[in-house]
Image 1 (cartoon, rainbow, N blue to C red):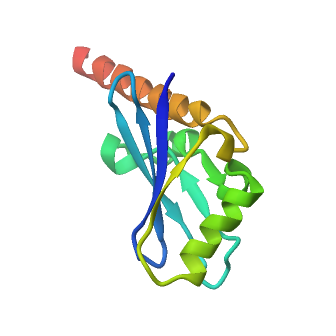
Image 2: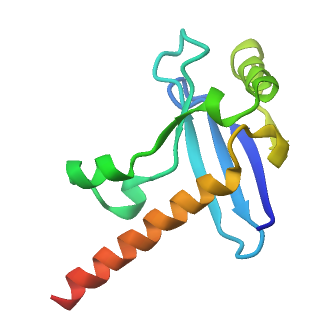
Length: 132
């Protein structure tokens, strides 16, 4: 899979940036907010790949199964994580930067596959409901 990845600033205190993943084969674009629930803590950055609003799923038991939250310092390499922190907390300007696969500690394809798997699961559930 040939994908592109970038991080874009948002200037939102609780969601200061967005990670954008594009599948170059299909053209699918997946955007996920980078959360910072405690803006005073530079190490409190997370990304969740599943978007319950997009998929219209709000049942707690279903959400719990789908909400894979990753601490960003476990997703990015240490140097890229430090660079992101610097852009988010030390500079007061908008930014966009491209990520290479080597900037990730975990394969970014895994993140895309998780999103695709959940979308497929959601579609199957909707089909079952429609057949009843």
